[in-house]
Image (tube, rainbow, N blue to C red; front, side, top):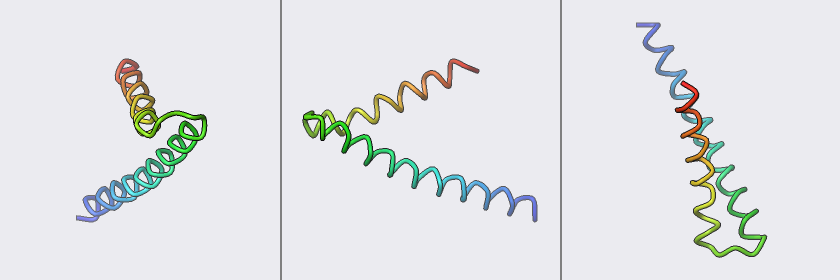
Length: 62
């Protein structure tokens, strides 16, 4: 029971930190791209292309 609780709270903490980091990272990338004259659509999508490349590269490292 204690092992299960430890895993659950650890997963919850990791998801919480990852969520906060994702929000901050998204806002930072959006502001950076938008401040350099790109459209709202481009500024919103750039973050997903970067994360997509990171995800794809991570899958290839396996």
